[in-house]
Length: 137
Ligand SMILES: [Cu+2]
Image (cartoon, rainbow, N blue to C red; front, side):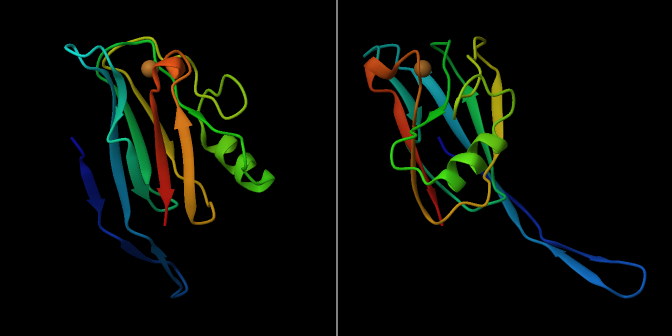
């Protein structure tokens, strides 16, 4: 299930008459789960499309531990740096900490990245093909 919450853009009038426009942001929920019947591990949805400034909410539904690790292969150095800076409590290059509790959420704000596809996977379930992709517009 995908949930998208729109935040209305807000124009702030500052002293002196200057106006700053804060762009509308969306939040996108990605579930990390294990199918109880098939035993398959998955990010759901496996593809999330977002803009810089949007928030990704990785929600651990079941099957923990999970993690979110972006693929380093083919990433330009600046994109790698931006992604690393966007990841709270990073455990290694492009890696979230190991998320051990079902029900927990891991949030990151999509940094300024060139439009394109950024692949990620779950380290504990990499061998089970638990992966997804972020498409930045
Ligand atoms: Cu996993």
